[in-house]
Image 1 (tube, helix red, strand yellow):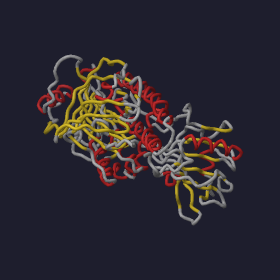
Image 2: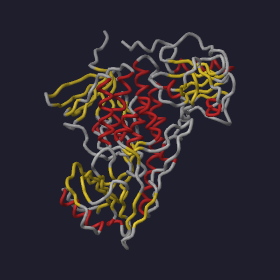
Image 3: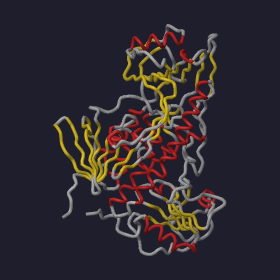
Image 4: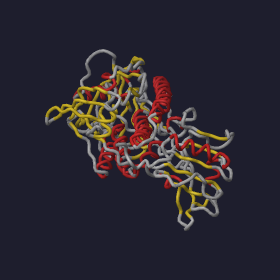
Length: 507
């Protein structure tokens, strides 16, 4: 007898990580439910930096232009000194000109509540919406599925699902319920962050009062797309902090030494202890952790929201594939690939925090996340091993090209969507057997459907005639093989469920 499940995936937490996973599952036709214990969407600006790699994810989702329109770019910094002088310096998030291979070189500044609003709108277009005021209160799992107890506005209910994903933040109920350890350390700092409407400062700069002892430090950043400023300031490890408009006005006056900055209102404020922690495991049976439920970090570097989005972007296609028949071992690669990324991110954010204490913090290419890769992953296939060019596990570069009918296109246009993409270079169509659902095949060359007359694909990938490049649904190179290794590629695809009809879900 076939067991009945109310849905395939229950996502606990409707922040950026939960919304990313929901959008990805929705466009793949996977049944899911997205719950959030808060009664309404998160109101704060907390994760306001959108790095170039995340911009590529959002382009794939069809929302990048909306997010860019909702916010803006980082303004220059205006440093205020104790002697009353000021110094202007470039934005501390480095800007790079777009290239044919990296179309986005500049981080965006978008308050988190605006980013998540765009994501909810996209989810609604796909026919779903978060269920607010619904809390997960109990978890029991077995080999076949997960039984959860929910408490909501309409009462309690028991739900049976195939998989549960905890996207419920640093104090994750899911993580605690599974007794997953969350080792790390408190970094000896507390901070206040607040969104405020104020007068007395221009909106053309990020105002930084960082001369003198750290207890006097403060920054006020204009939030693009709003009339608000975000206040960030270190605070003592002990004691209460007045987060009212009057209390924050007193802080601003004391730290700036000015009486002409008026705080008119505070829409959101939080005082928190800065931690760096990483979950021991990202998976326990049929339950997974994504985002802050799996890792917490200092805010320096603008990495948190971006890492969370990319956690879910990695997990989404794997969950969908396994639900539709791929081997369960594919899900083991989620932790294998993402946990080392989070460990590196924690180290980067912590080192930037130390640099900030000495006034030397400056973000660069490393924070853009374009060089993150899964070269050590068991999903990376390269035969023969390559010396130059793109490697298996690397982010798949973009490249301008032209379709055989003459219209301009890009590789990212070919990759866009929930499918795998196979590129055959300068040869006949790849002889890999019958057409496979969820796999798009393109032949690049004079007699193919994609014309690389300007050589950008060959330059960006460093490939030779006859090479086959298999690009994963999350925009990373899964495999690069020579024409002689096509049978190896077929075996690889079979391991990922690409030999069967993955459009038919398991019964």
